[in-house]
Length: 173
Image (cartoon, rainbow, N blue to C red):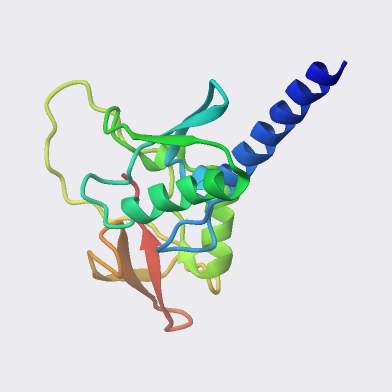
């Protein structure tokens, strides 16, 4: 009975550590978890620890090292070995963001990505296209892009023509 209790306790501990890993906040946008952002691709129990697979929002993302360190720190605090693996393929897409994560961005004043990215199976053509982005502050659709790149490469800087406030748009990738 004692060995069974120890197994159950370890199982409970791993479940708790997995939940804490999934709750790690994005270091650049600390209102969204890396799980809701879609950066966590899988969490697997391996031996007495966890293996966490992360896919960066783009290769070379400077926040990736902080995310990896934060995930490992969760394991260290609990005494659970956590192996972090970075997987670049398939490439991260905003399609992987949860609805809860999109709402967290909106509440924070960042326009979440809209729709799904276009999936192309053949040649890609270039067409000028105006993106319809709703202001996360007042809800107006009358917005304009000020700069294609905002505070991070995955965001653009926009301004609302109705309330006149600037805001970030998390770009659809």
